[in-house]
Length: 394
Length: 221
Ligand SMILES: Nc1ncnc2c1ncn2[C@@H]1O[C@H](COP(=O)(O)OP(=O)(O)OP(=O)(O)O)[C@@H](O)[C@H]1O
Ligand SMILES: [Mg+2]
Image 1 (cartoon, each protein chain N blue to C red):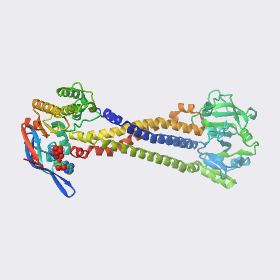
Image 2 (cartoon, rainbow over the protein chains, first blue to last red; image 1 turned 90 degrees about the vertical axis):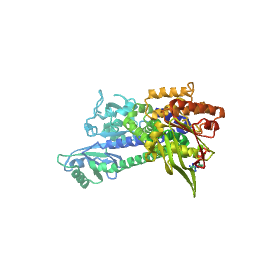
Image 3 (spheres, helix red, strand yellow; image 1 turned 135 degrees about the horizontal axis):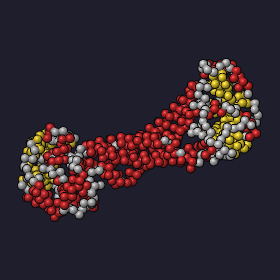
Image 4 (spheres, each protein chain N blue to C red; image 1 turned 120 degrees about the horizontal axis):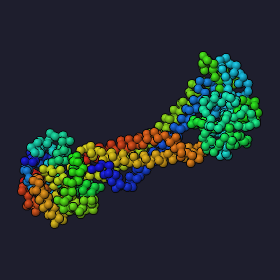
């Protein structure tokens, strides 16, 4: 007999209970997927930010809050700082930058930064973007401030339908898109890159502040640590951070996020398991006579065991599939809500938000958990004996 | 000789009191015989059949199956004997409700790892033999009691057992159907030279048997 067919029929016979149980499992899976996908994306973005300026020293105003390589809040630096950093012994180049998170195109309030604008002295683009190319037909912004040119990341371009020559409005000023960055980096694809002076005029209205960070590249043979120490000793009111120090700031945070995510998932898996075990236990005790009959006609324990475990595994499989489907939709809704990127765009990107590997991993875990959930009921079923069961029916 | 019991005793402990359901029973069941066990309710018929059928272990004494001492067998070996050599017919039929008549008969064959094609052939043949060739796809709840018991008999015969144990197989049936079922069971067993042990209240069944044991308070009289 095909055990699976038989088990399906057993489950269908108790349609309401089975559906409820599958619903419960899928609810747990929805949360596991949504929480997992959201935190994974979050940590990936933050980890990725650390690729920037690796090997360089980042100088920010004292007290500024730095997440990975970028100051997300805190003071501005006066023009003189660039000169001073440049003059510190062992510094090869000092590139000032004006970084702003959460710039909005529209008047919609957003809960998390959805884009980042970076002002850089023309010609120093590669300090930020490395060797990321522009899409064909684009150019880096002209140093000529009158042209008001900007380069935008691919995701922004896609979202707002921008091409070379399009206009974008920033701080009530119309800028012209000169090029589009061809990148999959989460940060760069959401960035607007423009000449530093243009950014200064847009944000400050003057050029006395250079921005909020300076990237200092050490000379050959000089360590980041040495440069950092010298900068902090010689320049007042600044903080210099090596690559390692920048990592140390967020790593515990990221680990916390991951631990919480894992903890939440574990609790949800456990809840799912308790639910499946309970339902399976009820199913088994309702069918005591059936299992005792199987026992009497000589069914091996393993066969009886397999029937129960197959039933719970089927519940897990169905619940897991439904949960992953709905959970993916939930993750997209969450992502879309927090980034203000239209839903329709996200659906094309489904496998980027939730990797197929992640989906398979969750399905496998759900199936494994529900398989384990069947063990205790299966043992109970395989112990039923006709001489006891028929009597205790009464 | 198919089965033999030796000073077979089964006691149940209920709190402080001890109930001796089967008390030092010695009996022998010969090959191809039709044996009936009669006795009032509570006399120990079911307990005795469960012991002979290796569904239960005695408190003391022994059950021999084909001259093999079954007290030495493991649970797995006892299951194997039940599956391949013993067929059970229950008073309450005990068909699996989610399986069709055909699948219920295929079940012991599947458990004995008979190839699927042979399972089907054999099951159809058995259901024909019990007169249910037009009920193959019916679920138990779509069958009458008499039909259910016929399916159960077909199931009991599936693996060509040498012993059939029937515990009041006609207990839930009206006397006419019960008689039909008994005749069917008998004729099939005669045909296949299968040994049958029936526990029954039914005098007609007892009369038809080759050997009749009377049991009272767990003792053969
Ligand atoms: N699991 C048990 N626990 C306690 N006592 C039991 C148990 N099983 C059987 N008994 C007792 O053993 C005695 C014999 O029971 P058994 O079921 O074998 O009788 P029976 O002859 O089959 O009766 P009936 O004709 O009503 O089916 C009864 O007194 C019963 O109360
Ligand atoms: Mg009885």
